Image (cartoon, rainbow, N blue to C red; front, side, top):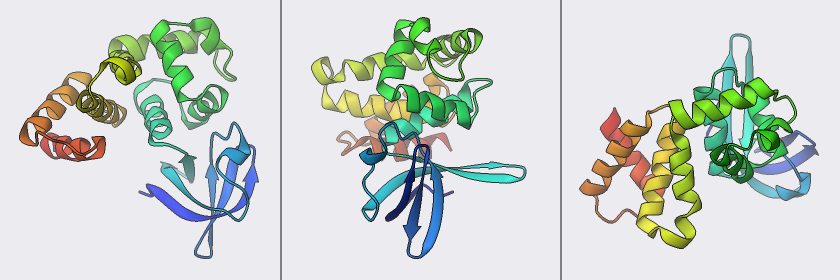
Length: 202
């Protein structure tokens, strides 16, 4: 799997970019609300990626942050009826923070304004993220982290969210993160916790 690319921006279009990586051009579909936000043509940039493979097609999706990529993976892997195109439309229309807030608040009207989402799809997204996956609890914790949660709790919560986006149940994610932190009392960052938790879950 291609997890990121470092290269020179060769082309910028509304929903994709071309990245020159040592002479090889990669076309990457991206949720570019503002095309200049990634950089300008000729800039050296790093793009986080997900390679989506279907029977006769391989498509590379790119993201400016791990939060964007985690939400994309959560939507396509855990919400029935949501594919990469709809997930990209969500990220392009709202951004990950606004989408999470709307789901936590159950704001169906705001979510229904996203291109490609009908009322039934919006209801299913909220229902599955809240009830079946339970991810909204972790989102609420993350939203309050800046003011009321310790930095270590924030790191743990980020690791839990990453595990949920990879397909693990919320209860499994919490147990693995708690055990990983118990084995290593002073985690440096969320990635360290995530790697330790994944080793426990294998």
